[in-house]
Length: 320
Image (cartoon, rainbow, N blue to C red; front, side, top):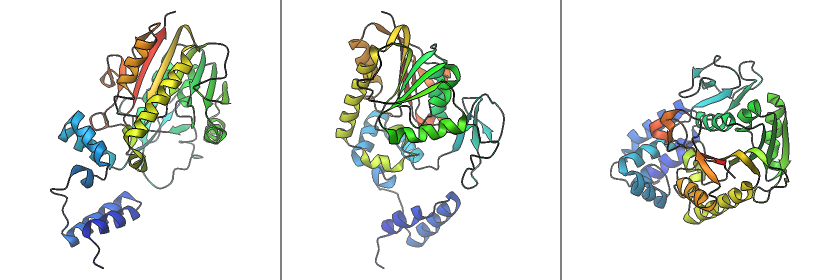
């Protein structure tokens, strides 16, 4: 058919949905075509945007960048947080006793007794959600609550939890999860985090902000092709608006939590530094998480090194 070898591979292999057949077809086609990845630029070999790969090389070096690209193209684990349980089906979490890795065997049946109380998410999300939940606070506001990954943790330790997201459509999956998992004390709200519709302060405000999602491309492969500097600039501006909108909703002695699934310093450390310069009445507190995932009080997960998705989290206490 005179189709270039690389085109045959890039169009045929993804049609195989299961990991076993996909690997077999990939190997056979490569042997038949004699096609080799040797000498190809990293962004071509691992199918990522060129400017993003170069950006990572400048920051991480070539070897760590290739490890990250290989991670993004690997098959994700399936696992979940099981409230109040450190036993059950599957292997134990790398960092959490109440997290279980599940065996791949087709579609998950959430009516299964072993899964009926599980919230399926990467262990990194579970670490971030549990850490946010462990910070003191009985009356809690969660901004960016849908579809409920952090709510699954927060609702266990928060007698009153207000869960807000920007649209009814986004809150639909949250409502489904709330019903299946029997969440109590949760109040769903549709509203904009830049100007939240509340008059009283909260003991704790948790911001799970929109971001470029560069830490979770393994699970969201299409998201990598939405990467561009303009998107990064838009996200960082929105994140600052959300932080500004939340500062007056934290009571004195209360906590602010900031979470992204990004690896980019503009969305992570640079936002922390901007916030601390702009709002000196807040001081940084150590984020509650396993020590190997925390540096300078900040949760900072690099997927190839820690074996879970890339997430970042910071927390502050309001002093006045």
